[in-house]
Length: 622
Ligand code: M6R
Image (tube, rainbow, N blue to C red):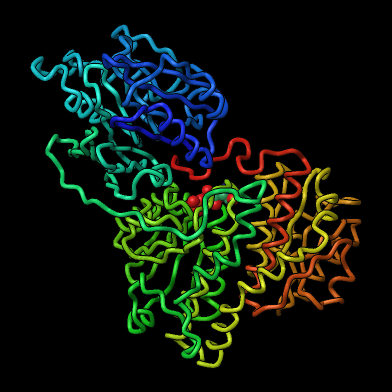
């Protein structure tokens, strides 16, 4: 989704901004632009629809300076056009703004500005912000308010006055031609982090853009404004009072955000999974006691036994991990556990039990819907913990306590290793909770040892993934692919369908196998591909009955099964075996061929694997 990078310091800003935009590319975007202050403070702007490389090529030598702001846009208000690219300028071209987020009251504000003679050049909500700032900057008392003329020309007052009239979310970086060497910023619901260098200062919407330059950062808080120059940062509250800020140090992460020998991040990240799982499980399993310890939760057995139930919230792939986690918690701890789509949870005025435990599950830690769900639980007195990958992200900080899943940087839009590590983290919790309740030491030890070994089994599968290409041939020309599974495998079916849709753009439908006969079976005709996930567990026979029902209607069955299960394999047109494991861990193995299927099908169809159309890596709008 949209990305911001800004710089104030002694170096040439253009290269630093372009490099920062490249580091934000993985988030997904459709256009890019920048503004750099010239030697007299004047604003020099360039924008392009398409990739950052196109912007880079378009920038002429005349654009130079040491202070600037830049942006990758993911269209919300207005089409993908050059006019709608950020930065946006006021009428006199003295103020430039880049913006992440959505202004909800754009309509009435724009109407008032139009009635006062302002001419708009774009369809964006962002342009409303820059004209609003300009009105207050000129001391004009925009929109019928009066502003004292003696504060005209004060950028902080102009920004505060404008922000006070906005409704919605924003991460803003602003340049004023009259204030060379300074970047102004404001945050409300859309992350911004300041990077403190040596005699230079950066601003970004994602710490990943800062790490080549500095690890000393200040996370801006919602409602805060900042003034950034080469010497550092000053922060203010919206009422103008200076606020105190804390300098954090970004932890070194395992794993590489570079491609290395792989052609795509998605493939690299699929192959990262054995090591990613080791990073997540390492130091958290206690096999001798048959349990796990998640220090970040800070919950002892006395608190765990009192939990009446657990609720897990997430979106997309994270939601699928929640489904697996909820099943494992119920199975091991014998208390109710439910997974819920975060956007539904936040908007349905949920009933919150202050005694229960809520988890917010998110790779990026920035997903607006999941963050909104966290706030809603907290407003109603509930306790939410994060299950998050990105350290220091908004959700991690809003929750305060939780589990980092330690996947390492995930750059491909299609989430793979984060799914596995979310599942692994939730399985660790299920084991810890299970042991605090009725689970026996023997059962605990069995599961702990199985978890310890799972990275090896994942590696063994990835070394010999089976006939993926045969499956690819069956799905690439299909009108629709049906995915079926039961229990944890129903969540894997949903995840496999999501992956194939987002990477290969093939319509997919995922159903718990038992539901097939209640509707989706009507879709089947001769040759329809049906992916069935049927590991060798207590639900397998029922799933195989559904498989037979598909065969009877001429469907082409693509089966994921447990190695050695020849009886199941014999029922399929194409069968891929995964290593045998503890039944609760099977999602960590059965998901692998589905990730590879999506990757290979996307490749066969010539898709943009790492940046599928219309999608963003972190979805920071509602
Ligand atoms: O960063 P999050 O885990 O909160 O992201 C949630 C979803 O947006 C994400 O999983 C999305 O569904 C992925 N593109 C799936 O591959």
